[in-house]
Image 1 (tube, rainbow, N blue to C red):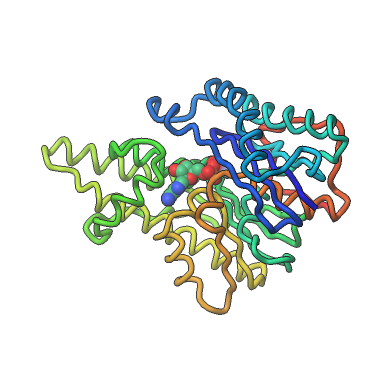
Image 2 (cartoon, protein in one colour):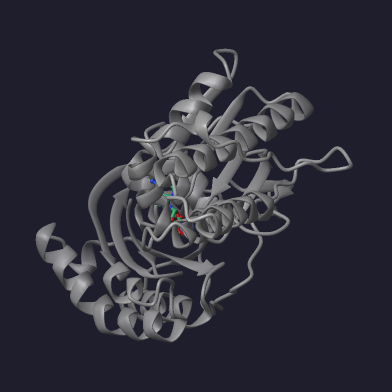
Length: 337
Ligand code: KG4
Ligand code: ZN
């Protein structure tokens, strides 16, 4: 079954053709990074206007590159939340138009669940339960996955999302936007030992995360050094920040697997593309737990993960709808059976 996936929840216009949930025939991601980088962050109004401009030419390009006609497609899947309302609406209305025109099923997909599906791609079937961790620009969610339809929230960030913290720290260090890849690059030449940063502390036992303390510690350190007229050890600060983030994620994953007795972990979302964090988690969580991290090019927003998860939803009878709404604050939690 060939599914067209459409993803426009933020600043990437992405389309994909995936058959049977796993075979990738086409994967096109048109990034708006250049447009937004001069503002050092995403401007929602500009993002949705750019989606309008790009989506049909991008669809035509992908169909032509893969020698596919619209009539070859069996279903259309689209991210309907969470994300920026204006951006989501472009994907949702394009998908609805194609589904109606071709008389094929229209499948709404939760963006955060799709990020986790990217980690299980390559396996023909998902065998739950598992602990899932989404680390993206807008979310840091830890879930217990019974299967691909049922997600129970175990913990989330109480302030900044991990990707958001990367972007803000990069701004403090004058590294440009998006911050994650910039911090990863410069941290390679730094040494975390030279700059100690604090781990967040909670009074109670929790699976929640907090990033703002770490971010503020970087801000104060930079301000202090500037006041003293000293140079800023940007690579060392970046390395230390990255190390503390990795430690926090590892700690929560250890707690979550212990608490739920799950022996499998799925990790997805833009920050999971970070090589240092990938290696830290793989080595710190030990061989007793199977850890699947999405392939680096499928960590950041893409439509392969949308078309892939949609196949399983359709198979489980959760697919088709005729009226589809964009839901900007859609939660990752869902208890479908
Ligand atoms: O999943 P994603 O593409 O979009 C959202 O759903 O938010 O994640 C984007 C986030 C950005 O904050 C970006 O800085 C971060 O992922 N990111 C990274 C890396 N690549 C992207 N963070 C750390 N290291 C990276 N290599
Ligand atoms: Zn995302």
